[in-house]
Length: 454
Image 1 (tube, one colour):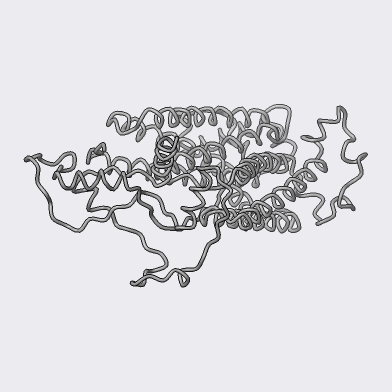
Image 2: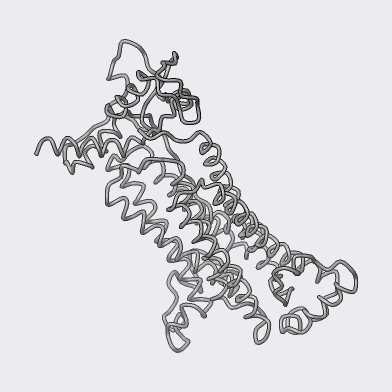
């Protein structure tokens, strides 16, 4: 067994909290970005000054200069002619806050990242992922200005293509942060059927397609028209002549307000249907409890998102509902329950360490000494006996039927609680035990059994 240096434990915890804070900041920025779009504030700052633009106008002369710069673009002349300085300040603050959040996220990511690199607490794989995320964040800043620049000369609003790219990239970075966090929690892989894993991937892909289409709807203001449901333009499926009147035909998929809103509706129906089928499949196939709970929670989240979308459409896109629809699309719900499992070989190694009295890393080594105490040990990860059996069946490619039974049908001399977890903190701190997760150890055990059998 390899001891984990004592000083790495708080650093790993710090890395997790750092990434959590970045994820929260990104979610807030998506919300502020949505408000910036809904209030038509995104073109109020017509220059890109990454450093000097951090400060807002501080004098009346600076405010007048910023307002005069805004008056030079088509949006002011065609949509906001006659706007006074007070009204300009309102839209300016939204865009300035959105840009400031971007700068804050950049600093909040880079400085702790450099600190962790200097401390040497990041492994090679984590470093690569974090450098990639940082690169995507830098790209996002450039994409943001690329989007704004599209509305400064020949248009009164930003390009819906660039707006969609900006939003999807932000949510992709958010997903990458969450995925990295999940890998840092040492959770065991879910014992799910291959079919469920395939539908999970399909749900992810379809979700990002839907987010892109939602951004196109926002960019074209397509949510402010065709405010009926379930019909759109007088029918559930509009006529082909109305859906594809532009040439070439494929431009309708991105530029035609009717077609874009119709696409957004149809993909929403498909996403909801797939999420429900995924949940039903998880329940009927008797997948593990975490898999079932996650699938059901996902289906409920998608259903709520669909309801928010319909309500937002019927109410002609009021800002609070639109923001709720946006932020709910960016967040997900995950559930996990079960118990711990222990592999005999891992337990034997731990017992050997205790018997030989090897202290944890960082503690003085005064020869072999036994430290009395009550030590709990089990492999990492929460699992029930039923889920454990399903995992064995999956790893051995067996078709053996497995049926769960309630605790009442499995009598024991001492009554056990329905949900109990072992506190392994004492054995970690005293002997520096590195505890593998149950899935990893189960795979090792089955591999050894298969080798012995052959």
